[in-house]
Length: 330
Ligand code: NAD
Image (cartoon, rainbow, N blue to C red; front, top):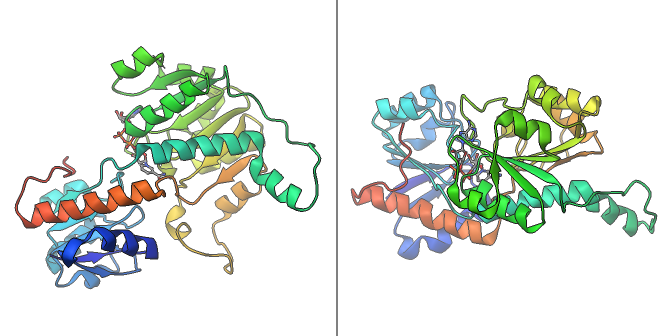
């Protein structure tokens, strides 16, 4: 099957080619993102492969239906960037990689917590310049702290286990409660109770109309003063301007984000020689208690292997007319 792969980086090629046995599928790689302006590139392709910042809105879907695309396969878990209803109306199937390595993202959330807390990113540079002082490096023990987990699906569950391992008290909020996590000692609470009682809050729910700007001005007034907020899920769970205000007045003590509401024009690119036009990210970067990573939670060898295997399986299933195990349905 001939597939147009969008937003391609060298590592995408490496891992997809590795598992595309006997060149079963003809993969044509484009560095460009797929959006309403680039649909012409899909002429002659029955299937496209996309990533987190490709924008497949109703207009793009309309154009894809004209170029003849029948399948949109996301090589990621989140599908908030695809208008599923519009795709359904045009009879275009949408598949994704629902699970590849929840541990990869959960471990990255943990890395953000430990780095913000013990300031290893700063001390690395200081020691290289022969500054061995401990000034401004005081952290806190994770042991005994209360960690609030919002969304206890695959990644949230892996994260709960890690936090329990540190000896934290783990509170959780989800629209569905996990009996297995309860047996391990996780306590489900209301969202307000999580906000009020947690020293650290980590977001692991999807972005949808219920969760967009879950962390807004009101939510920040409800958190424990000086709490830490970690977001490895999707940027728009946090209203960035409100987070900046909460950081300025000290209500939010630390912010660790692997995702950012306006990451589309920034992340996965080397912009070191550019003038960044996004003033919000520049403001965030100016805080000593903010740590930003460029959507790298998924970026482990194990996860990339699984993403490539499942992405290709989705194409094979479609080509063979098999049931689409990983189809995104309304
Ligand atoms: P999942 O579907 O297994 O779990 C999501 C959980 O959120 C479910 O338990 C669901 O019931 C819950 N949920 C849904 N709506 C909610 C709400 N309104 N309030 C509270 N909980 C709610 O998904 P997952 O595999 O654990 O992934 C979680 C998110 O992580 C994805 O949606 C994706 O956006 C993000 N993600 C990020 C990276 C990265 O590299 N940073 C990689 C993979 C996934």
